[in-house]
Every structure is written in structure tokens, then in C-alpha cells.
Amino acid sequence: MTDKTMTAADVVGQLRDGMTLGIGGWGARRKPMALVREILRSPLTDLTLVSYGGPDVGLLCAAGRVRRLVFGFVTLDVIALDAHFRRARQAGDFEITEIDEGMFQWGLRAAAMRLPFLPTRAGLATDVQARNPELKTISSPYDDGETLLAMPALRLDAALVHVDQADSRGNGQVLGPDPYFDDLFCAAADHAYLSCERITTADEMLKDGCVHSLLINRSQVSGVVEVPLGAHPTGCSPSYGIDAAHLKEYSAAAADEQAWGAYRERYLDVDHAAYIKNAGGRDHITAIPPTIY
Image (tube, rainbow, N blue to C red; front, side, top):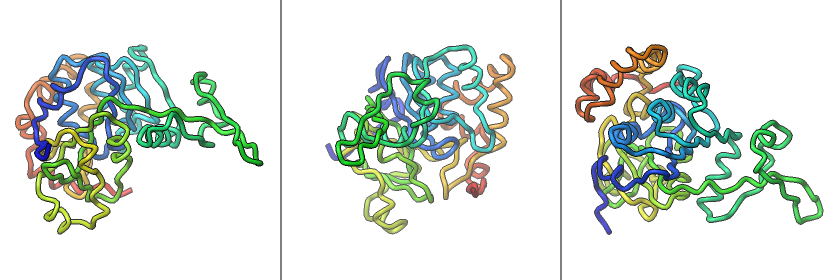
């Protein structure tokens, strides 16, 4: 299969209730938000989410689509904690597995390598083990005999990631300063789907960035969706930064049912073109400077 282009609705149509779904990006950075909003417009539910969480997690938790969440954090960067996630967690709406960020990466890496686990020191001598009694340790078989935590593989039924550019075959390019772990999400999944700011050719991508920016390999990708501004309100550096004003509006809506209904009607119950218009339009979003950390 050489042409893997599809629509966001096509992607969600290939997902099923009860799946384990990995979502790439990091906090409020380069999240595949257009695909997440497409899930919210579908009946898809009973999901296990695996994410370095941001508003992707908050929205799906608030909508009651999550059965279990595997996470290292859920933050909006410019706002310390996602209010919708906090509200749903305090209500006990879903099961959780909260782990160290390093353990999370090692779990993805083990799944990508098709290994059952990888040993790590991350998480040892902390409450992570106490809160997750299913985690096991292993002794080094060598002379050191060190006790290590055996982080189990985080296998994914499907992964969703957002990149700057992709070709129709599924090669994906990241032009920002941090690739996060999107390549691992794709390699750890049975099926990976890219949304991108622009579909172009591999030759054109190499004019915009070196070969190392071609982060995602087409052999790991099942579908590609061109959806400009598809990461908003999270940032997609260098094209646009995190929309802090929008995230404040999103967070404030968590405190009031009427306000949340208005947010949902304005931003979630509409298609992507209407969403972008209601969020201020392309010129407004692309004028948001990339966030500097």
C-alpha cells in the first residue's frame, strides 16, 4: 500500500471500543488534537489511554471515554494541571496506572522492540511500586547482582501522533526542537496514524530539515491525515505555539457545567474548519509564537 492518505473520520472508523490507544506529543505540545476531537464526535468508548498527557487526556476523560489511563503526568504546560482530568480523577471515573516518566519511556521502548519488559532503575525506592503492586523486580544475572525494576512493555492497539509534514506513504517529519517519543508510540502500536500540517514528498521534506527530522518510518504507519493546525490548542513548533488563552478558556469551563456545555458546542460539536474559525482563525493561530522553555 503506497498511498495511505485518509480522513480523520477514516482513522476513527478503524478504532474499536476497548482499544489501548497511545497518544503522542507531550503535555500541551504537538498533540493530535484534531483526531482527538474526531473521537469525541464518535461513539468510541471504553478506551485505555497511554499518554504523556495534556488536553487530549482531559477531553477524553471529561467525555467519559476512558476506562483506564496509563500516564506519567497530565499538564497543560502553561497551566500546571488539566482541570478536566483532575475533576474526572477525583470522581473516580477511570482506573489509573501512574508511573515515572522514565518508566513510561522504557515501557514504550520495550513494546517497540517486541520485548516483554526492560530493566530500569527508574521507579525503584519510590511509591510507584507501592501504588502499582503488579510491577516486579529482576536481579541482574551478572556479578553485580543489582536489583532492577522490570518495566513491562506498553503495547498499543493503535497510536495517534501529529507531525509537521508527512508524505502519502507515511514517512513523518518533525521540524520542532523536540521529537518527544512519537517514534516509539508508532513502533509500539499495531497500527499508527499520523495527522500532519501538510502532506508533501520526501524530497520536499528534506529541503526543510535534515534526514534526522524524518522521525516516523512509513513501515510503521497505517494512515496519514492532512489537517493544518491539527495540534491546536497545543503547540506545533515552529509553525505555532501553545494557545494559552484558549487553554485558560478550556480550563475555566471545567468549573461550571453551563460553561462546559458552551465550550463543547463551540469547539467540540463542530468540524475542524468550524473549530479553527471559532478558535480565532488561521492568522491568529499561526501568529502565536513558539513557546520557549
